[in-house]
Length: 434
Image (cartoon, rainbow, N blue to C red):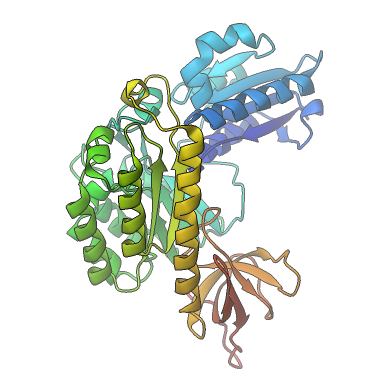
């Protein structure tokens, strides 16, 4: 049987595309192999959001070309890098047989292989019990630093029926944690007369998946309807992933990010008063053009006030095709990185204090895998932790299977991880919930 090898790069949204591409290729009669040097088709599904992603895409394409060698294998490059640079890149990488973008890969690959893509079926990767579901394509916000609208086009919500079909399909394959993603999940449905809250209610009715998590919310579109639903529905994780990007108003205006400082603070207060115990995750860009030491100190004070449960900070990346690339003055890269380190040092202390406050608490966790750390048996996450970006709960005893939702007790904490022991199971009872 002919074989296919896949390099899947980038964010969760891109990974879903790669899984759908792989399903299309397999439906054409190919089996997956982990050895690109023996594959009949090699696919590199790329990202191009920032400079580092472009560099990784180029390095991976070169690696795939070496694996192809002089064999009559086909090398296909898809995704954001292909969408953004395929005209220029085609001359630089003659080894590539097909360049497929983010919107035309189905037609191009289908024609090449004589197969049709499924609207939702994928070859699932990662822990089977935790999977992403993309609810929209593109973005219409036009933030001055972001190239995504130029790559993926304007925001386009998926039809609710298609989303529900995929959610049921995932549930039938053992998914216990469903993570909804888009460039801005909170904007879902606004151009077709519905809302994210309405979609969530449909998913809650159509499936019995015990954990539903939201990622990538815009502060402007987290409203009362969504907050009230999250407060009322235990199956929706009380987890808010809201990149604020900065707090200094001159920079927020330049970034074209609303609301400004007052609105951001009011939103944080509203989340915590409506959804008690909610976990807040945010992200900030340091070194954006025009950022001075006063702006940075203002951001640092805000982080200390907000006390985010989770936080990511990133040095500004000047991207061709964005408005911000022309702005000056631009802080030195070394300055941006130093500011990132300072913010994360402050956040580390906050994170440790929050984690230590959980010692003695009982939590439900989803078991991801056997633990690699010495002295622990299982690696898990709580409802306050998203996969890949947040901390872990390491359990030192018990008997569990991946995907099981279990009750544990927190016995210790580090800067970002929690340590736990399994609660004794009552005779005749299982601690799994959902």
